[in-house]
Image (cartoon, rainbow, N blue to C red):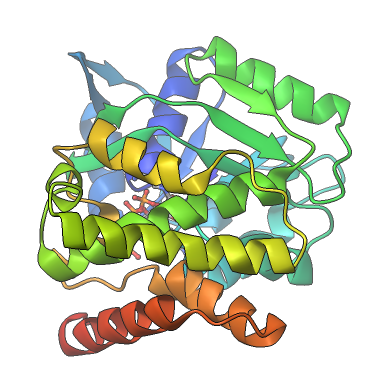
Length: 300
Ligand SMILES: NC(=O)c1ccc[n+]([C@@H]2O[C@H](COP(=O)([O-])OP(=O)(O)OC[C@H]3O[C@@H](n4cnc5c(N)ncnc54)[C@H](OP(=O)(O)O)[C@@H]3O)[C@@H](O)[C@H]2O)c1
């Protein structure tokens, strides 16, 4: 089951269903209605339609469930887990695939042993019932305690066989932090300037600020003992260049008057910095600016 079938949830659900897995998407009414009528349209080089079950509420899903993929925005995590709580049996694994820090803490408050994942795939909702696979990349899954289970191997294998290359890590915290630092150095800058990712790194003064933002996050991560996976600074520049034509998700949220994930990205880095006494002045300012724009615009 996919809880929160928007862009990324529909991509995973669509790929898994196409590969013959029994999938049900839980999403919002208009998207679900379109999928029920015509199937899920996936644009991925070519365009094809996948027949997949879709419902508007977790109450309509039959149990037992092997796997629940949580793909709501970070700020909807708690509410979504409360809605699916009853569906989680002894053999059900919850895999949280959102971006940002603090997701597994929220999940662990409510259920035992959630699995955390990070995906470098990109997806966009084109219209209700229709998504486009905007970028390919690995998905990495792991547990906070570093233990690797048979079930995790099965999940990685199922995803990979479905076309979503997936590997397991013993250092999921490091993977989550590394991706969050990259997001911290790209997303708010795109959202504030309305520039595409590739344009940001063309402006030397902006590029310098992006690097300083990521370095603040590295200082925090090091202070609290996180082992980062790669050098987040070069990864940030590389990612912005590789996704040069993309408007990042925070910019898209601002343009659609939606809430952003700032509190789970730069806001969370600032909060960790405050608690561990590492200064994060640029992250603090970025968080304040994005919250200001959000408060003016989003109507959730
Ligand atoms: N899209 C990507 O390329 C991508 C890549 C990597 C990671 N991610 C991460 O994945 C997460 C999801 O991103 P996304 O782009 O897929 O967001 P999205 O398109 O907004 O999808 C989330 C969907 O879940 C729905 N939802 C929220 N609460 C629900 C509930 N209780 N029941 C049913 N549906 C519910 C939302 O509806 P409403 O909008 O009406 O609330 C929305 O349709 C984010 O953390 C994002 O950072 C995304």
